[in-house]
Structure formats: structure tokens, C-alpha cells
Length: 296
Image 1 (cartoon, rainbow, N blue to C red):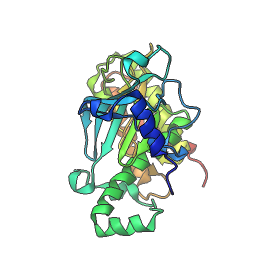
Image 2: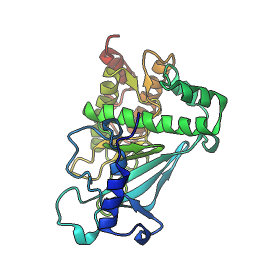
Image 3: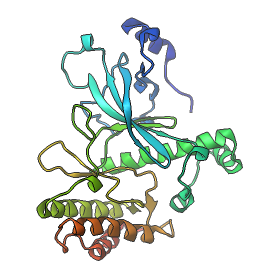
Image 4: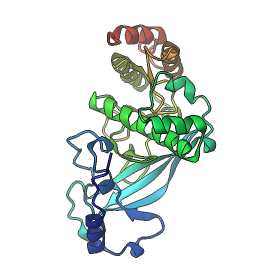
């Protein structure tokens, strides 16, 4: 697909708001204009906090997490301060998740999750099979695209996941779950809830697992390490992250095994932290998820 991005307009606007040489080493012009195609941007209508100004600047603020297949960075996308009026969409904190090529990843079981998935581009498929440099880059982009597409689908279905802002190559930008000062939300594993809170989380996470199964999917790697506790609002609801390996419960022959592991991992932690056993019953979660599966 030929890009409709107009570089001449982009550079003209960039020059109108400042010189590229004036940017610091940890800055770049916003890459939002480069994601001109609808498929590369999050679900519409865009939330009002999305920064769409072409003169905005991306400033890298630090590392949030290093993972098996990707690293996550805290990014501020904002207009220069002197151009802000205080309106929504002038500044926002984002997570930039950047996928590494296969030779630089420690994730060696990806084939278990991708069973049944097809690579639409035959050239990419051949390159990945041969392990060429282009193929390795395509593989990294494939994982980034998989996560972006899954986040888009889940967010649109009303599930508690970060809003996917855009994808460009191997970099996925998504909603930052945390406070306005850049403090990231804690992972479930890092919390020590009282029994009432643990039970509330159990109810929410059961709904997530069941609603995901209704879409014919299982997370595949759900655990207290990839569930955030959102500090915004009074309820401190759980938000699920790290979804590129989501598996199809029918096409993937290990789908039911992944579903069971997801439920057991989360329920074991919740019960250990005081959740009502009836609310954190892995067998009940599994049965409810199987009942919810869409007919094929």
C-alpha cells in the first residue's frame, strides 16, 4: 500500500514551529502524521486526550520495562509549552513499546502462540522462513502489529486494556496507565490488597477472561505481572497489558491449555491475598469462559 503521508507538508509545518536541529537527542517530531492510514491509528472517535497536532514533539522520559520481546518507554507527546492553551489534546503521556528482532529476543516459544495465524504478505513469509535481515525485521513488526490489532479489538469491545494510539513499524504507542506526574501504575504482583479489594479484582478479572473468551480468545500469558492497577479514579480497577500472544481458542490446539493456565495463575494469587474463594475459583472461571465462547 502506497503511503498517503505528505512529507513536504510535514516538513513545512515542522519548520514553522521550529528547527529540527533545535530538538534534543531524546526528542523527535511527533510521528502521528506518518500514521495516515486508518489501520495504523486507534479506534475512532479518538479520545480527546490524543495529541493530533502536527507540530507536537515526542520526548522520551525513560524506560518503563524491559521484556522478553520488547522494551517499553515513557514518552510525552506535546506542543511546545508556549503554544499550549490548556485544552485537551495538547500534551499526553504515552507508552512506546518497541519490539526487537528475533535474534535480540529471549522469547523462544512464540510458535506455540502463533499456531493458526497466517502471514498475508507472501514475501514477508518467505523472508521470515529464511531468516533474512528483512525477515527478522518483518517478524518484529508482525508482533507489534499483532498487539496493536488485538488492543484495538479488545478496547472496541469494552475490555480493560490501554487505548492503542498508533503503530509505526516495530513501535506501538499506547495509553499510559499511571498518574499525571509519570508514575506508572503498579502491577498486581506489587500490591498488597485487603480481602475486599482482592475480591473486587477477582470479579473484574473473571469478567475480562469470560468476555475475552466470548470473542473466541484467551490471553495466553495472564498473570499478576501483566495486570496493572489503575490509580486513576476511586476503584483502582485492573487493566490487562501485554496481549500480542493472544490465542484463538479454536484454531490453536493449545488454546484450552492456555485458558486454564491464565485462570489458575490469577486465581491462585487472588486467593493468596484474601479474595473470596468463590470469586477466585479457577474451575468456575474456565467453565464460564467455555460457555461464553462464540459458536464457530
